[in-house]
Length: 379
Image 1 (cartoon, rainbow, N blue to C red):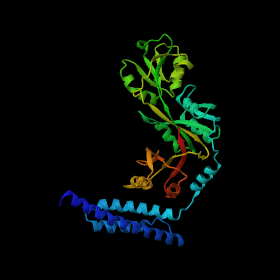
Image 2: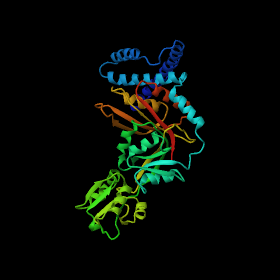
Image 3: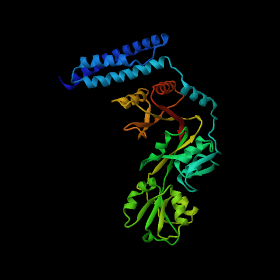
Image 4: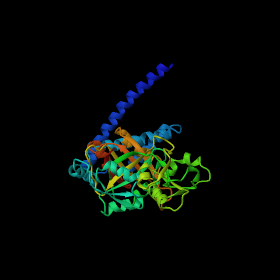
């Protein structure tokens, strides 16, 4: 047989598959109605295991594994379709509906906002982009920002979450599971690092450079070109500039923003020292209460999964079935639990979609840990 004849066979088989798939989903809908009438759960693990054993044996050794993946995907699609026929609102979806109704139509321009670092920090620059007249409470650590928001000391908090060239800010991800908060905005801020020192200091005089570990990583090529220079990590790029300004030494410098040069009366020894010109850091704006402002088109969530083969694949398949684009998937180890992970996921989706609400209801009722972090827009 030539390629055209083989493709004709594939087309014919595909038509048969679609017809059978439609029949299967229609039957699933009828089963959903029966389960609802008789108060039966949608998920029946014993029934699914029975089917997997049967179809695997029918497929034979060569296709057994592929058949299991195919039918596990069918199970997920069937459950999702069943729930869509009779959506069950739960605590999460009710909270989302309340937030949609009660959140003001405009994002506030004046607020008390917690930022990590000191004046001149990139978090402060991000805050000034999001709010026209913020009052800023500076915290020494990222955890301090979470605590300020959770304890009601500030209405909002600003946190860096990832950089386009150096990856995720893992310290922030590791803290997320410990605090109650919701994301209401995100911002991509262009980051332009420069090397600052006291007036009169020359490049050849510098023996030690201070900065945050993220900035150090983003400027690794520049730092690798230096000889005999010690690199010291500190809590914040602006704090590094302040340390240099207040130091009695004349052989120290900081990797900081341009703003810090004038703020701390330092000279710029070198501009644009980051590895890439196209260098952006993404910041999130958090608050204690769930608020969903108009135009929100991105969602974030954290969850755990069963420690079984294919569990992550099946989770992602639920979003793919609705045509939703996952923009970030991050995993972090769970403290105190060997080889178990917390997943963080960003997805382009709207809570004004009935299908999305049904999916959130399904995920939050799965029995595993699930935390909806918010629905928001990115600027």
